Image (cartoon, rainbow, N blue to C red; front, side, top):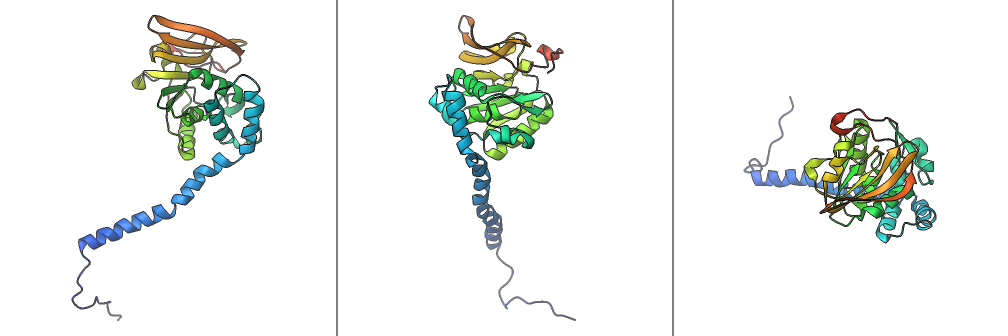
Length: 262
């Protein structure tokens, strides 16, 4: 029968402090060893296809009327191809919207940039993204330094967007919910950006704006929509029309009433 291994005479069991140091080292070493790997996992999608993003910004945004340098820089950084289905990644930087499933789309790069520009987002601003979809607009807002909250009515899209944003290193809090009602818990917002068209401006979204805050959204029925800016002033909302647009209709409705479906 094999004999048991013996500790050297007088050595006794390891002291608790020594064991604590050993356990801490066992935890820390794997975390430190993989820190570079985790940083690379975040950095690689951001670096991939940078030339395509630069071309998209030059040809689709700067060639039109997007002039805010911070917005242009954010659009150059955010990897749009990470926010579309794998089968459509080759078309991620094309000049148009793309389907992302569940009847939803990710907006045309120009429209994302234009709406962001008119939202007047500054670092530290609290911003609500209504109709988060795949999370692309939320990522652009986060790249500008905003504190981003997102509401998406399709639970599967909300879950996937939250996971995607976290994986890519964008700080945003996303939940499934009715965009008509906004997210009152985190109001007031300095800006609200909406990626689906209600037939009229939802009153709850105006109420959740800070005074001086800006709500940028499409409004109208199918084939008759206008992108507008609603600014909340001390005397009430001021509405400024921008351009004709074509968005999917906002579903849900006030207090959960049935709305249009795309």
